[in-house]
Image (cartoon, rainbow, N blue to C red):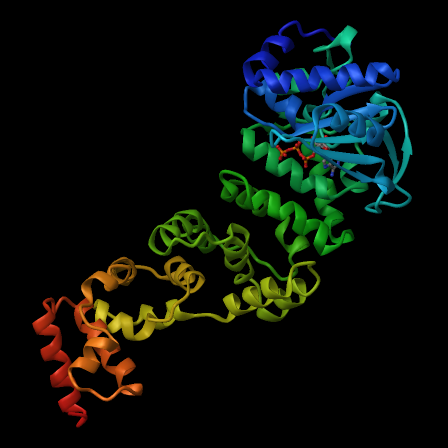
Length: 432
Ligand code: ATP
């Protein structure tokens, strides 16, 4: 046991008074039953690193569901108990969420199986975790409130900026840890400790990741996509030769890097232009799956537990190739682009912006931005056409579309110009 005198200061700096009261309350309620209650996982790691994190994970040496019920009886909020796992989540009225888990030990009946669980003490609970930096705990019981518990030298690994396994079979028991190692390594710019790096490359050589379901891989990939800078981890997975094991047929070419670097800026630009926030994972995954052949990509997608809509949206993204069509245009004006892209959805817009290169990219950006100003620039609508004596019908849509293209080209600005344009257009079509 290592005493860290400054944990209380760190908690005081990172948490608000109400949150501290809550932690003390959890310790007191556990004391009433002679249970142990400990903060664990990412919260402890990030507290020591000075990184804000409000994911409160509590290990209870006792009953997690009962402690959760007691907390909610005193502090309010809702409790959700998961009997099967002996865990519970409390959503407090202050919007804080606390996850409680009964201390458990895990047995893997065979490599990469889902573990069998048994109740245990804190040390064993921490020993089943992925890396030493994630296996630190802070005691919440009153007599030892704020005591840092560090069975596996996680604190010195944090100081030395190392990702280290707790034991050599760890990646074989749960190959998703390979992806987690890369994610934490890249997030904090840490190094894989040499033995861990060695065990990892052996696990990759043994193709350990092929032993788990695409869904378990997918859950970890989503976490990578949600990182501040996912591209670093995605590139590192390539460096370690991991991609072909998680997405069959995927060969990482350097050219993918350019599109990956564009994903977040493009999503930001699309949100800016359309007000629609696209889901990051959808865009990242499209870029990645385009590197494999369509049959393998579709077969992989079919194994994921995603919604029908998400699946068909991804499949459409893989087929979509408007960027290639636009790439051949030399310097298309906004009018010409309007004819091709009028009905382009925000996702379609993102795919074009991701894959288009060179001068055309600037023109397309300009068009998408200009298009948002159409409602102000367009001085005519169906009502005005009616007043001009034009019979309502499909011709309205056609003439207004032609007018939009002309307006985007900056050719017709005033109401008079626009009316003249409409008349000429209708005359040329023999309507007037
Ligand atoms: P993040 O900051 O990304 O949320 P986290 O450490 O909180 O990181 P979680 O995925 O929320 O990550 O997991 C919480 C804790 O559970 C981890 O800190 C780790 O101790 C443990 N854990 C999660 N996944 C695994 C795993 N596959 N194997 C072993 N332990 C795991």
